[in-house]
Image (tube, rainbow, N blue to C red; front, side):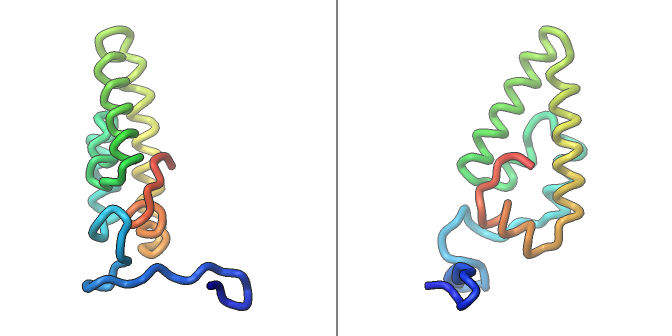
Length: 110
């Protein structure tokens, strides 16, 4: 059921004020942003966020970094740039928007 403006209802709240379901507990955007900036090419920030598609994206980043390092060094450079952009996005979003997209949601990229 939605409100008169057509917005969906908020998710049901669990015991600690977070929604029921999703991928677990609320995640800290500062921790996710710093992980993305400093260890981003390895996809560590994706594993920290913990959703199914986020973990898949983390595995993709890790594989591209390892294989790219063995071949041309292009993979780690590209993954580092992507992770730096994601870290900046994480740190500039407000808490509610960050948690809706990445903490409780399962948004894998940007």
